[in-house]
Length: 436
Image (cartoon, rainbow, N blue to C red):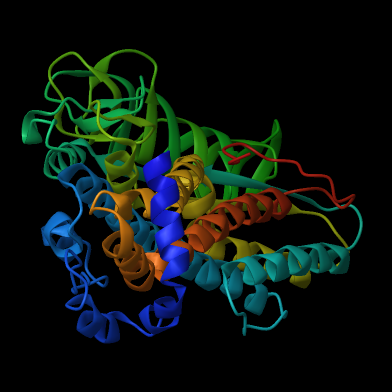
């Protein structure tokens, strides 16, 4: 504690130098040579790999432990900001497209404002349709998967106590996916189409029994239906839409298996043999590692997640304005998949990652004085603190803001998907397969 007070005191005493530091690392590099023990080089903050290759301890003349902490937190800050920007771009496109297609403009400063406009546009469109309509969503949710091998590799490179590729990374029970050469217990993604011994969520090339977002040829809720929209249960052929129910032919989508069975696609759940190329659609439990490295790897792996797009079918009927209802249906089916990628595919994971990353970055930013103190006392420590602030301060503060933006974007994306379905009265009413 006394050492930290000495460092802060020295920083105040040398406060006259701080405005110069704030002008950038170039100006500070000239000053660094004037004070023994202070480095003069900043890392390239545009590339995470450059940050991980940078010797923080040597360049900032701090302890190896402080250097390792600073490296991981800096990489986490850059990765978090990049991931937040990626999510914002997705929502700006998805929500912006939805708002535009419903006549609410298309020029939005960010994803949050685009989604807020989309929510209002959906409400206005429902009001235009008039009383007595029904609308619900039939959704094959997006599947966003974190690569467990990539996480293990990241852990090994970031934390010296972790043994690289052999690091044990676990997945939330029931959320492990991959190639299963034996029997799969859970669900099977039949993107190429195959026989589904269970509930099909996607396309079906034969007779179905369940919800149909297209036109039902057969019976709708027990009554004859000849190629018309069915907001209830369809028994027959579902044309031009997605289904959720039994499929007597090939299911192109996700099959929730009734029992353990062979899966020719991607198995999610359990495999009676070892899963190949394992990925996790749920929460990842990493090996024991520093909080700074966990924040870095969480952000890095999240940014590299593979996401299969959602399939959205809108079941709509009734109302006074059929043209307005059809326009709403088309706009939702076109734009909701990208919004659901955030709300459902990444939502919970992104929210937790943002909160944990923000806490780590804030903690590291507030400990600059302590980190600087590891370089020694007096003027040398004060100069190191100033150098850290000039080189990394804006990056850390930007990441903290990005974490808040990410959390807000996840929240508003969920609100968009909730507002998409509902009756004329405005109440949310998710249909079969709804993400709610």
